[in-house]
Figure 1 (cartoon, rainbow, N blue to C red):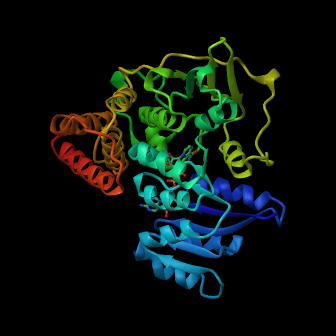
Figure 2: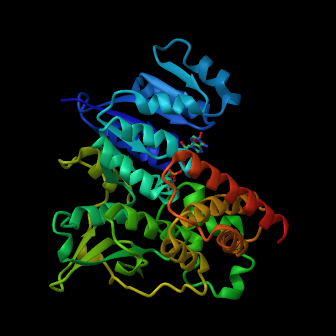
Length: 390
Ligand code: NDP
């Protein structure tokens, strides 16, 4: 039977990798229902034409004419504005890939969950900013959440989910990013270009910077806690520069189960899209005779303060993860615009967390979407104030 696929964020790195798998699948295996982008109308139109999409949504209305002109001779329906993303997610599909970057993906992803179908979750930020609400919604609507982040996908593959009492801890692996061996004093002057040059993974700009600060691993820690219902104390992080082991689960009998593979996002995407079956992915196969050793280190949370801040936010609970995420989004954007230095990113996040902690002690976890939006907006404002005061 043909599987109907929607991709939220189709013009991004995960979106394009997902479409690459669709392109290589048998003609009647996968059919594209809806695709979405923020502002890249040209790429969205090209994708719509190549994959004969039923519907496309562009969040930013400034480029609407480009999209409309490019698709004027096709049958593809067009939606413009943030509400069009919700319409894309509402379209009947068997699988929805949630691959918008940042908290902007929250409402469209929740709309996809409301359909009660399979949702591939790449957008970790929406789980970080709304964890309890998000997981409750998945349970209430009977949706199936399939982790796409390679670490969480690895854990999903080896986790005995129906026997939680046998699990001792989850172990997330981290590549360590481009500055793993850079001394602290040199981090003061690293550039945007240095930070974007990830040694292993090719990714969008925001997650590349998050990987350089190790905030990405911090967001993943929070993501793992919500996805697999484990407290911070039962989730460890280990630096593994080769990125061959994508994560592990330790059981109470001492067994450790790991998922391995070449560092290529098409493996976890294929796993999520094909689930519960396996589908072919054109990734480089592992040749164990050529692997020059797998190494592991403790992460340095003095040098990479963002990772410590994320763990503290998870342990503080309530609104803290939402504040952390929002402040980080603002700080990363400012760094990408070359308005702040690399080490200012965790400084801005820490400042925002401190300000919100003193105001509200983070309170309880937000369980209404309005509360999340308010917290997110306030934290962004605080982060902007922090940037001005640097
Ligand atoms: P990209 O920046 O490459 O792509 C982001 C996508 O989201 C694009 O389609 C972009 O549209 C769209 N978008 C951006 N802002 C908005 C907005 N305000 N409203 C609606 N759509 C928007 O990101 P990635 O593909 O790298 O990452 C996507 C998600 O997947 C992130 O949450 C990331 O953490 C996660 N992830 C990514 C991995 C990777 O290898 N890239 C690995 C694991 C997780 P446009 O092109 O028009 O700007």
